[in-house]
Length: 210
Image (cartoon, rainbow, N blue to C red; front, side):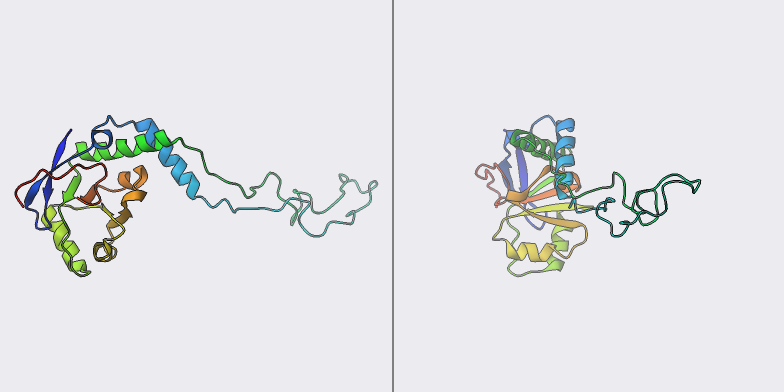
């Protein structure tokens, strides 16, 4: 089982923690990640687009001109698709874009994304945020001390309100709960920050430098 060093918000070593191999040490499966991310993005589509067919537009009940003798093609209604103001042929209708994805694929995609970031050294574990009150300035100082830059995904637990309020106003930081962690959000960010409380599959801390 691989281990990772734990840091405090000052960027100093604070021990180490074991990472679950089934989450942080698998061979990234790119096709599975692509399929799961595609399904996740498809599920977000509202699917409310709609056009009217010739049966749904108003008007057109009267034959526009007589059948014969005009020299033109016969017409039965001005609501046909080739008339201005007519219905739309083969237009979009409300539909569901969601795709069914097996749970094993979702878990594998999550593990692949975490393992990819871990292999690049872009997973950071903090022993404790130690933010007694919400402080955006304190959150910025913590990121700088940890050497994290670019887009950052901060994984929090539901009871870490001060942490959430401290990071939520930073434009390059995305907050997510541990139970909502997914491959798409991991891949959209350069770094993934955990605390020892929000780290999934972690064992007891092995550090003695606290």
